[in-house]
Amino acid sequence: MFNKKKEDKMLEEKKPSQEATSVFDVANSYANMSRTGQLYGKLNMLLDMKIWILTEEKKLREEIELNEKEFLPNKKEVA
Image (tube, rainbow, N blue to C red; front, side, top):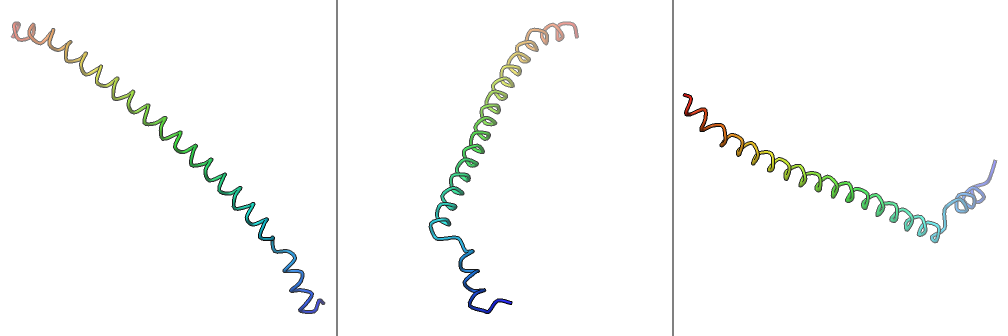
């Protein structure tokens, strides 16, 4: 068995250095920024799709309204 001092020294040697921890933190922050950028990209894509869908919906409603105006007076005359 190891004595207590050797065990403590081995545990101390296994701990990452301050520089390694700092480098890991920087790399982790880059990964988080990249993920955040991807999420904002997806959000913008969905917002663009939403705008396009609302524009198409407006066009269709206007077309329906024009179509109804053309044929509703004819229905009233028949009735």
